[in-house]
Picture 1 (cartoon, rainbow, N blue to C red):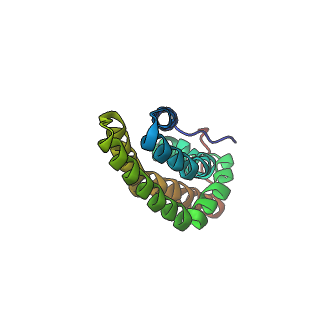
Picture 2 (picture 1 turned 90 degrees about the vertical axis):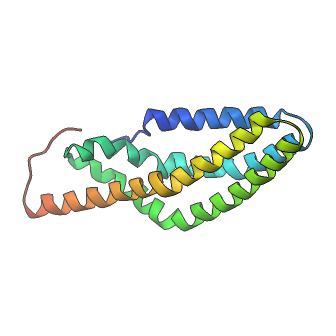
Picture 3 (picture 1 turned 180 degrees about the horizontal axis):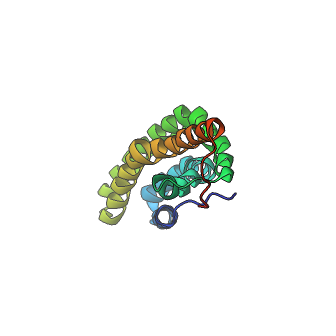
Length: 160
């Protein structure tokens, strides 16, 4: 079973990538700060795209009480996320520090658009920490729970 990141999250990440690319084209200190940010964010975004966001594609089905045996295939992703979560949160600290630097140099350069982008990306990181990562972990917990219930008493299977 393939797990797909919900489209709004895909679009948000694409927009952030585009805004970051534009910041690297701003010139001077702003470009340098944005390029350092790219260096930190690229591997982090790749990890999110691999393990943190795809489990969220099951949220709606699980919330509706739907279940199918293929959902257990999400468990390696959620288990890897749980194992790597401390590192991912540490990466966020480094990213936020780089964003603060970008915000400072953008403000000095009179680039309010880049200041606003940096502030929005800090908020995005907080949303990931407080909403998306915990929701992905919960997907794994719900799937494990339903798998245990199914083993104890076979339930009616619903296709997601």
